[in-house]
Image (cartoon, rainbow, N blue to C red):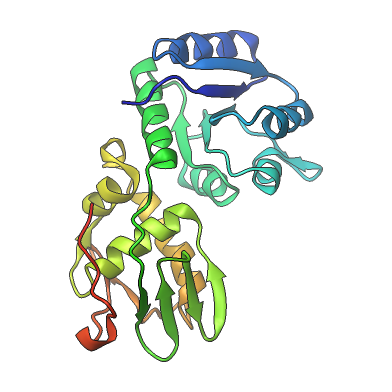
Length: 243
């Protein structure tokens, strides 16, 4: 059960901001609002909220709010937008959003997504003290949350880490989109297949020698993804199954 958390709502419409705050208060959260983009950055860096909700993110040549937030903080960010097209959702996630909700959305859905994002942010990630040597190109160090690909140390974002962990922990087995969504994002995201596709793309860009022709994270059309099976002797030590 998620307890009370501090949430900053960034919105240009006062009535919408007030409605959001009232919805968040139902679960005991302390929500405050800000309308100015630069003030939002100041508040995030000075007050360190547990979550930020951005209603209609600004993105222009002079100031990209999501990118600016990511340059100064790793705080979870939920975007609310009237745009319901895949490119808009992918763009927001690419620029640092943790979740994307299309307006209008119900108060129940908003509160459910807030709880899910907060759980994901606070949940201790699985951290087996082990280094997995897949082959002479790829080594995965779960302790340090990084991969060594072609001799380069590549840090992983938390969601990338969780996704890779579950794929490697089930090497050789197909994990459906629904399974990956439940394990990495939570049950609330069971229909959001684009999250899996997007983060698989992120991982491939980091660990594959040629992301367009992946050799590690393989797509099983219509089913999901599997991590290529590798010799058991190369798994040192074996991973412990976890959800």
